[in-house]
Image (cartoon, rainbow, N blue to C red; front, side, top):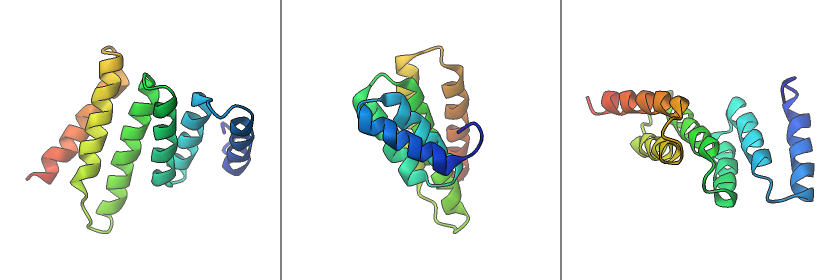
Amino acid sequence: MELKKYDKAISDFEKALQLKPQYTSVYIHRAIIWDKIGDYDRAISDDTKAIQINPLSKIAYKNRGNSFLRKFGEGTNNRVYDKGLVDQAIADFKRALKIDPNYTDAYHDLQIAYKMLQLLNQ
């Protein structure tokens, strides 16, 4: 993944999941790749699986929130504004902060989501 050989990394992650299907970290890392290559639906799906396995995964909530925001941003190119994506991102950032009130990255991302929401409501 660090070498940006995403196809190989995804293949390796899939092998790891065959060996240990409840491996939260693999879903989180694979979601990061999906997000980097712009496949936000798959990123959201993998983070959701990680959350189902470990409902206290603040990283999965934060990452899923960011994928919702990126998916929203992708829609703005087509002038299709799905406010629900921003609402979902906000909910995820708040869940991450409920798990860890000192999670500064989640505060930062929540602030960005609120700014997006504010722009939508203008």
